[in-house]
Length: 186
Image (cartoon, rainbow, N blue to C red):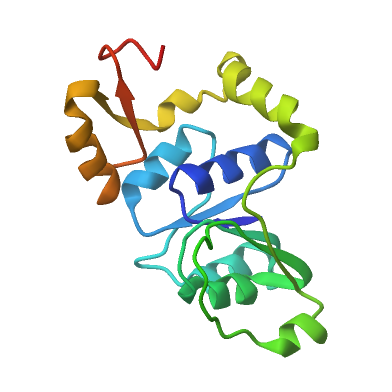
């Protein structure tokens, strides 16, 4: 499996896939994000700034391509990368495409290569209890999502927090505003 983008959402997709036993390749521009991913056991980074993602996936899969690709980066430019990296008969899920727009795809990849391009915005209601248990209890067995919090601000620092969240950098993940710094979101 390939997960493109190791922000909080991509990292969670990659970590969950790894928990199922999948071999997961992760792609991101920023080494800082790969460092965070490694704390979740993700050991196959592709440095998108210096490596060709598709070539690396093909090398890692003996030329076959990934069985599945999750694109967790907004914008249309990486849809082609995701489609090129998935094997014939494989699936690509767009998870970060939250704005309408137009993208160019190769219809032959969908028809002749039988690659599936699908989208999702959230988990289904049927698995809500399972997701809740994992999010709130996962830290007990190595799925500590608090590792995704990169910045903590007091309520009085809310404007600064929104500024940091509005202009993400390589080392910013989840921004938390707490009534009492260090007290969590009680």
